Amino acid sequence: MTRSPAPIVPKWHSPAEVAAILGYGLSKVKMKIATGELRSIKDGKYRRILPEWIDEYIQAQIDRQDAA
Image (cartoon, rainbow, N blue to C red):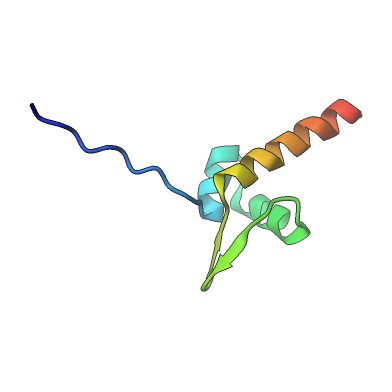
């Protein structure tokens, strides 16, 4: 029985990956990080965003829309 390896699921994403996930440009994601709308951490010289932070950002956008 041949087993295929389990896919590797990233634990965090770069701003460029988040831009692709959200369908945004990289500069928009960087702006969202700079304003604090999208949480991130600094890992050395790199920014990283956890998947749950992407979900929190999306939920905040939904909540803001619902409140309008």
